[in-house]
Amino acid sequence: MTIFNQFQLIGDPALSTEMARYMRNQFPFTGLKTPERKRQSKELMTASKKIAIPELLTGIVLLFQREEREYQYVAIDLMVANVKRLTFADIQELAKLVTQKSWWDTVDALRKAFGDYIRLYPNEKRQVFELFNGADNFWLRRVAITLQLMEKEKTDTKMLTEAILPDIDTPEFFIQKAIGWALRNYSKVDPQWVGKFMASHQLTRLATREGSKYLGNQAG
Image 1 (cartoon, helix red, strand yellow):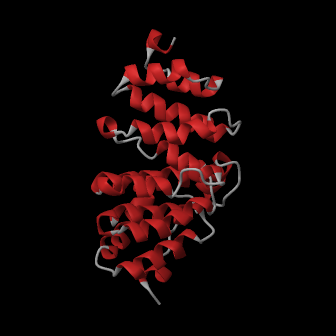
Image 2 (cartoon, one colour):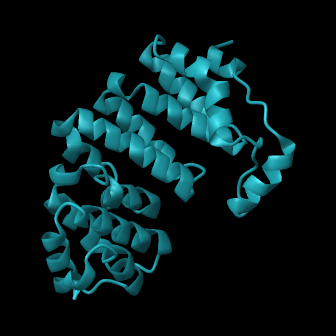
């Protein structure tokens, strides 16, 4: 039995109902808030850094498949803790998790891990982006749109445009929210580019409201 099979979280049943309700009762919870989850998984995180990558990937997938939501969070924490050790082939495998037990919490946490990877390996940004861009599954496309959230001045605006335009009038809430989020975040770095982009494209009301938050009068 591996360290991943043995790993167990001990939650507070009094919190589990409230946490499940917050996620619209789509997933059961053990009842662990983030600080306590991280405390209980600290040993696992430390040990994981000495485990061979194939075993680590198996462990991440194994934990992700467990029923309670906190195990998906631990799986993603393991990915983040070991991101420096991963290759593009590993990222390709882990990208499959985006379409499993999908909701904004895990999808955005995975996106952050992919964002950490492209910061470490900027030459592979396009390859990582292509894993998500244009996919049939909208959660994958949400990752493509928000992949560069933490790139700041290193944001590839061509890539951002490629991600946004095909979904510019897609009615899916989580896509429109992502478009607005990506534009709002980049407007902190280059408000002129974002203002021009928003002025020259017919965005939805939601994307416009979200994207123009820091633009003032620049968004028109």
